[in-house]
Image (cartoon, rainbow, N blue to C red):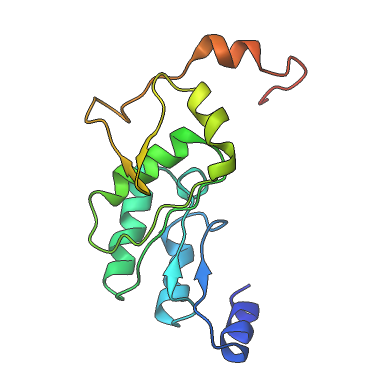
Length: 147
């Protein structure tokens, strides 16, 4: 809750980062107006996609708050967040799980191009990669469905 976040804000002297479980830009408004965090970390899957993440970043820019996209779900999330961050001036850092990089690279057509700590985007249409559907089919759980 924002009240709990305010209590933390008042009790500690460390920068706070908020947002991976917020759903849209309106959830971020009180965080920004009440200065409850020094960084925002929207998750592109939770917050409503590419357009909504960009709106959140633009809103944060007007409060001089940097944005660092959350990643907890793989290379598509990483690439979508990176593409949004290429369009905003208040990008801070792009979170990703280095330990999962090998698996991430197996499910996309080309491995993520990470050199010297920087993710390089391909310039190809869309997010720049295709999913490896054969790999996904071979490693999916037949008992799981999204219904």
